[in-house]
Length: 247
Image 1 (cartoon, rainbow, N blue to C red):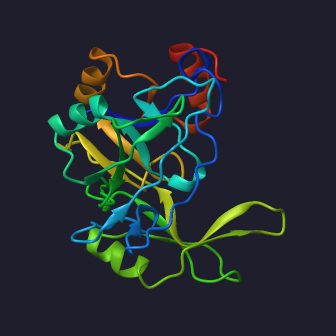
Image 2: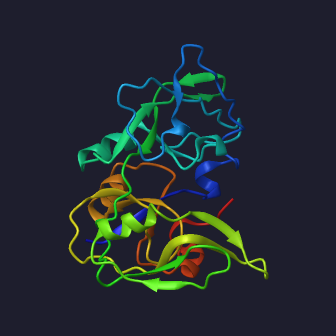
């Protein structure tokens, strides 16, 4: 299947004013609830989760996918309309938490924070992929291969995971990083979250071609789709052609 990264749109004609959200205040819950920001790749279970209310800029437009403030970490803020599409295709790797937004002075009770609870590595063909290990700043990069996901995780959990700068000011990862990632040709999930992209660092939410079509058919706004196999340097020109002028 062909996959796409779910990207928060940046088209001026769609979002209106940038940024969509003003700085969102942090709320303290006297009853002892836990902030969703502290649940990274973990299920909430019986924990009481509190969410902050995104405040939409007065000149911005209300969309189905909203670009929240930095307070929301790497979470997606989505409408009920978009949530229903994702759940239709199986969103078991995510939890959804009610998170109303403030727009034109009113609380809009139609939004959710989408929290990933699983970093899906099963799409990686480990036998064909290579990884780079750098245990400390004085070590050279060591290229490694793993037969299974379990072998990879065993070593990754034993090494640090930090971003450093070399003498030329270039960022590099201390610990276990990607070198060349090969994806499996047969993968059946329609929606998943992964930190292992073959072309660039970072994490993302991925959907299949079928999910993309379903989202587009019902007219969900401010959702852009970056092809998973698109080289990093080609995205800017590609998105401009498809989605138009950025803010």
